[in-house]
Length: 113
Image (cartoon, rainbow, N blue to C red; front, top):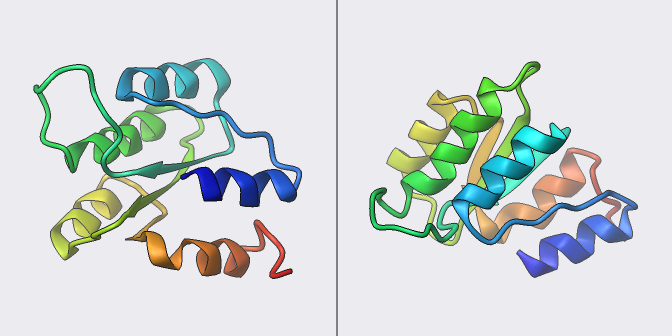
């Protein structure tokens, strides 16, 4: 995700980062960002949630906001069931990390150069 941060900073976007699920939820609640891009495997401080559900929980939290926040969920291994689950909870996009740069360009978030 460090590469993503660099790409977005080049495009003059303000970046807020979180290391753990609880930090991500706090940032979403306190800052109401325009968009959240998160990995499916953000670390948590306990074993109470399956790894792949962590990103989905961030999608759910962002959708509770008013208005709902756009969320892109990325994974090193985006399996169809996880993708369907994320999209079902309101993620705008859910895809493999390898496609991240091209998705950002296609959405006009960053420049191709």
